[in-house]
Length: 176
Picture 1 (cartoon, rainbow, N blue to C red):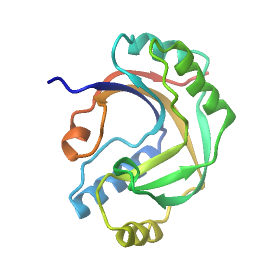
Picture 2: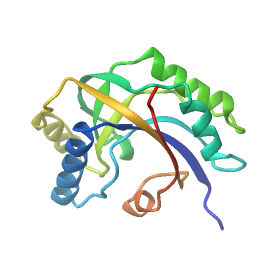
Picture 3: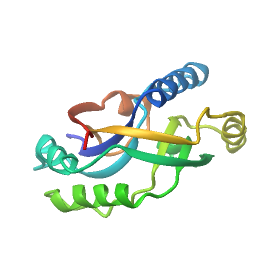
Picture 4: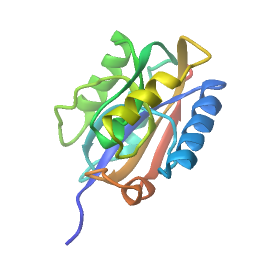
């Protein structure tokens, strides 16, 4: 049986935040035996069937500019893909970009944008997640994001193997 695939659109941090978050994700992955992944904010998720990922991304990014998002804190959840994460304040421009991706998508999805950047994907106790979230500090209060990427992945992300199956299909710089 073939596993269902999804197409996910990511917003990627600019330097120096990109290197900072990449290093932190790698450090936490080594410390907790978790998968390494690229730092990103998920903009939209849809079915990978019948989608022109590169075309969709290029159209949505054509009028987009780099985004500056304000950090509201570090939090944790019971979701594997939101074990411990950086939460960002909502942004009208970012919501518009997410809506444009949805409108242009062949298979519409009711994805609700919640701008956050995960730091680790790992099943952990509530106490350990809370301790980890409290122990982390960030060297900045805002992050600039300057590119978007389309990624194909399994529909459910519940393991290291699912994370390692991700593959990039398109990327665009935000330059306007």
